[in-house]
Length: 81
Image (cartoon, rainbow, N blue to C red; front, side, top):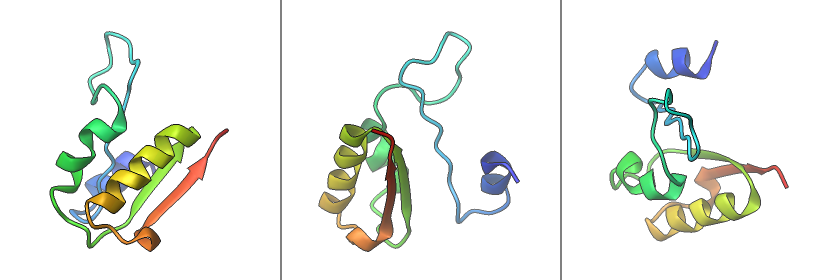
């Protein structure tokens, strides 16, 4: 099942697709992920986050979520560098 189909299956899963450098056809969010995190989580900390990408982006988003009251055990991540 694709992530988009999975996210459509229920309200407990969100897949914000981010494109910092998407072309003109890109219709998703633009900019850095951390610019959108506060609006995505909307003050909630009773869920899990999965972050994957380069070390600087992963660290920035982990730090941001922790500053928003998230438990570090709720933040899952993978680094690609």
